[in-house]
Image 1 (cartoon, rainbow, N blue to C red):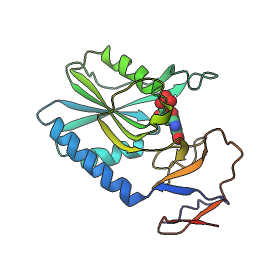
Image 2 (image 1 turned 90 degrees about the vertical axis):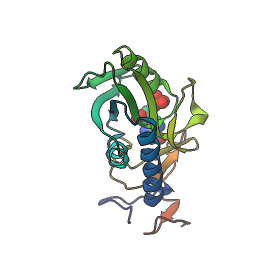
Image 3 (image 1 turned 90 degrees about the horizontal axis):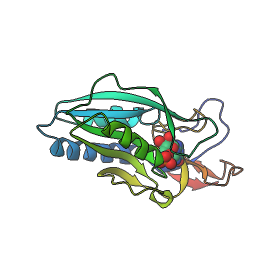
Length: 201
Ligand code: IMP
């Protein structure tokens, strides 16, 4: 898989290749299917970042369940505050149901914490978190993540639904865009071959 996008001159380092993502999502689907067997499960996927992960996860779940979406964005000028604006609310009631909150990545944990509080007010039977990526080194809030895809280091990642300024969501793997706090780092220090291996340029 060639990760170069039309018009791009830069390259990124693959952190998690497509086949590893598929394997882990499949395992998560099996774990979730066992844990929620016999329950009225509703997957709540947080837009936009989790839409690719949620679509694959849903197809890896072998029990009856439904999926609903919440759209959120940070309040302007307050990124990282944990206060989010709900741009699209759930379509269905979650009262009396088992909710699985599906996130792309948990960083400080502030967003997920806000969403958990919000969802618990709607009287579900339970709310559990499933996150594809866990950047636990940056956690500010203790947050149980019973269904977790991968622990990753403190790097900014894109792909598989995750973006940088609304771009790169279509990459089929997780790629490192730059190190946190290193906004000027070019992306052309590593080259990625078609098998997703990284090589020094
Ligand atoms: P938190 O509130 O700090 O846990 O941030 C969670 C949200 O920040 C995620 O749902 C993403 O939208 C975004 N985010 C955090 N780290 C990254 C990253 O490395 N790449 C892309 N988005 C990220």
